[in-house]
Structures are given as C-alpha cells and as structure tokens.
Length: 472
Image (cartoon, rainbow, N blue to C red):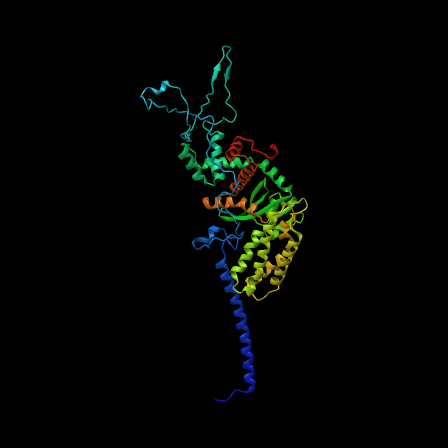
C-alpha cells in the first residue's frame, strides 16, 4: 500500500476541518435546542404567564416574588373584625319562661317578668314560587257597550317570569359562572322553579342587549381617566380561539370579545383609540401603537421573566444580571410603599432612585451584549435585557410618577374571573353570547366597584333600565 502524498494529506486536513466546523455548528444548534426544551420543562406559574392550575401535581413549592412582609398570618392589629350581630326587629319571637319556681314550686308565670337573655337563630324560609294570576274581566254595560280590563305593563304572556325570577338567572350565570344547564338545575332544586336552559339563555341575552348605553358610558369614563389598565387573554368561542380584552380603572370595568388580539381588537374596545392618560399593560407590542397615551409596563410580568432567566440558566454568569434587576425593583417597590406620595411624584428618595436606576441599566446593558448563551433561548434573554435597557423609564414609572402602580394586577383580576367561567363551563357556544357575557360581566364588576350589591344590580338590570354611572 502506497503512502499518501502531501497533496492528499492536505486535502484530507481541509475536509476534516470543514467537517469539524459543520459538527461544531450542529452541536451549537443542538445545545440551543436542548436549552429551549429544558426551559419549557422548567416553565411554571412563578416564572412565566402559565396559570397556577397548569403546574399540575408537580407544581413547585410556593415562593412569592414579593418576598416576606414580616407580618404574622391572619388579621392584622387594627383590622375591623366581622361577626354575626343580633338584629333589633326579629321576624319571630319565641319566649321561653320557667313553668314553676325552682325553690318553692309555685307557678312562676304570675311573678314579675324580666328578659335576661336573647339568642337569635338565622334561617332561610323554604324555597317556593309565588304565583300571581291576573284575570282580565269583560263587562257589558246596560247601554250595550262592552269594556275590558287592561293587564299591567310587562304582563303579556299566559305564563311568564317576573324580574325577581330572572335576576337570579343572571346572577348565577354571570356572577357565579354557572353554565345554563347548571343554572336551570340550581333554580329547580332550590325553588322548584321550572326554568329550562333555553329560558336561561334568553334571559341573559336580553340582559346583555340592554347594556348598550351602559357600555358606552363606561368606555367614555375609562377613556377620560388619568390611569387605566389594559390586558387580554385567550377565550374559546364557537370552538375557536378568540380574545377577551379588558380596560379598567378603580371605578370602571369594560370587557369585550374579539376574534383578534392586536390593534384591530383594541380599537374595537372604544377606549385606547382616544386615551391620552397613562396606560398600564404588559409588553405586548400593539399597545405601543397608540402614541397619544403614555405607556407604563407591568413589573409583575418582568419579575416572572427575570425568574425564568434564573431558573433556565445553570451558569451564574448568565443569570446574575437578572437577580440584580430583581433586587433593585423590589427594593424600590418597598421604598415607594413606605413613602408619602406628593403632588408631583411618588415621593421616592432621589439618591436611592438614581442608584438603583443605574444598577438596572448597567445589568441590562451587560446582558444585552452577552452572546455566551446558545440558540433562541439566549436570544430571548438578550431581547429581554434590551427591553429593560430601552424601556427603563416605563418600568420605573411607579417610582417617579404619583398614581402609577407597580404592576398590572388590576387588569389581570378583571379577566381572571372570566377564565374561571371557561374552566367551569367550557367554551362559549356563540360569539353573540360571548359579547353578552362580556357586557354583563362589565356591568357586575363596575357596580361592585361602586359599592352596589350584586343582587341589587342584576335585579335592576332585569327590571330595567340598568344602573348607569352618571346616575350616581
């Protein structure tokens, strides 16, 4: 066997170098893919937007991103307690007197009577339906004229429900998130009321249709607010993915359903299009297309993203920057919570704000330039760092501007109840029904924010007209 020539050896070296480069590139790609898959396995409700219910039986040990408050569990000193109190005018009084004297045995009922104790028992009356019959009478006068009585307004059918019956349907369906089937079953079991699923659907449809003026008033009120919260979440309607959008303040809530998630749906909500105040939301890009508003980003979302960096990366050099940003944010949050808000700002100590602002910018700048993490996971972390660096003021607005919250939890609370409805009852069957449900939920959430009892609010909706903000 002849020895290879120098030219053949050089050609072999070139081929091996090329193959080695290809293997290294493939290995780098596989490392990145492994990192992505490991990140998916480590994703939970603490470091992502996954709900706690998605953690399953393998959910991590509870660990709040807020840290310890230093307070003991339970009611705090000065917190007003709640207990059962006696009413001054009970519906029924039962007197318990001694029959005979415990000493001499004489009839004790002839002696002076003194009430030495009062004990009240609360009980619900047996559920029953009260039926009122309206008889239409016709009389013939001696002159030959025939006259017929007139039924009251809204009494037109041979058998129909009054508002005190229709109000519980709306209350159970929208207020307590029961399905139409379970709502009808509850009314049958509790009150022996013959209500069908179709009747439930018709009642809620009429209630949602009557809320046009209410929704317009609430959307106008939120549009004129100084600070408003915005969020969106997926909702199954007609077996397809739709989106539930929310706009809210501490006094008003407006929900609407749309087939899209972005700008088109936000314009359909009739709030962001004319909003000029401070808009608090997550980092979903379509919000930023509404340039008339000042945009503030949610730090609760940011803390989960930073926690994900810590959980997904094994090298401390790759995640220490995330810990630095987290520590500074939480320290500033605690400081703002203990300072007095001024008319011009959040009352934050300027030196403290400058120091932690510098630390956050420094950590984000270094992380944005770090290319040691492979694949799309590393690119995702660098994108997060660039966002923190470039939108630094939007994240720290809670420490610089009076009235700006640390997070967007207010908006998440608005849509959380609707997610519970989807979990209990599955998808909404029709888009029209989804619109009605969102309108009624907006109504009940807003009336509760105004201190109106939910049963009173839905009864007024059933009797018509519904409560309107300007009526207060």
